[in-house]
Image (cartoon, rainbow, N blue to C red; front, side, top):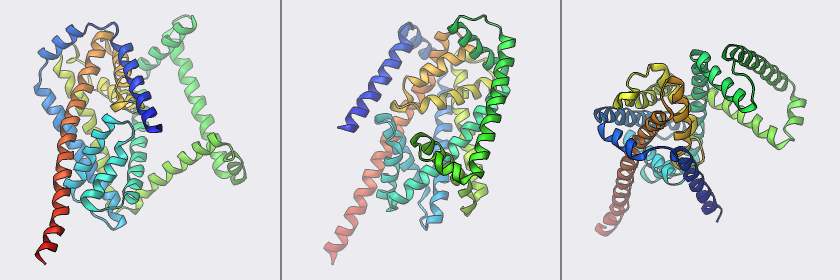
Length: 345
């Protein structure tokens, strides 16, 4: 009952967000743009996405190796694909499905593989945080002006981009210093840390931070830490290319530069974390609006977001379905082989 309720809520949320995004959009005009787009770039984008998932499967195998298991790259890749497929059906089911699939193919216990997935996610969160910081540094003027003007318009204040940017920078610096000082004090004072952990919310925050640190330090236990770091970087480079090359599909977005691609990647990754099927709705809302910063109309921004998300979703649904078919065939053969041996004896 709880799972049904959760699924229903995520479905309603996705539907509500999609309605909000598309209520003023001319869908006929959008479909016409899709029909006239250069589909060769979609093939390039899909290849980059496939390669990114193969790299993710390779990296996952590195995390599993120290646990005395060495899954094959094909089976690991198929497990990753089924996980993404499941995520488009039921939010947050991808990790469990991925580990369950790997158990069917490699007989690696779910309890072991799930722990490595958690560690893997920690590294992805760290990379995402670093990319958010890099994006804000490289595009500070553009982003700060956008956010300050947005909030000033909401509270009825004057729109002064320069003074607003300076104020935002001051707030960020003071905020980071405050967080740094607080974290240092809590880390060094065990009594204070234990007292704070009695609060459920603070305990979760501290536990999350400790988990992030443990996950980060776990790379030292890997047999090939250099390859692990390389694969992590390559995954995110490929994710960047997946979205960036699709700029060239539509004439209105073909002039967007590399920094626009970085902003899209960061904002899109945040949108994909929403509790909806594959980030549906949230991705369109965030990406469609942030692209206005780069001179696109909101209509063009939403068209781009729909194009990128739709291409990725269709590709992953097809590849994920094929991966599920592969798992069923391989698993069936594994069941039949012992039966044939028993019959022969």
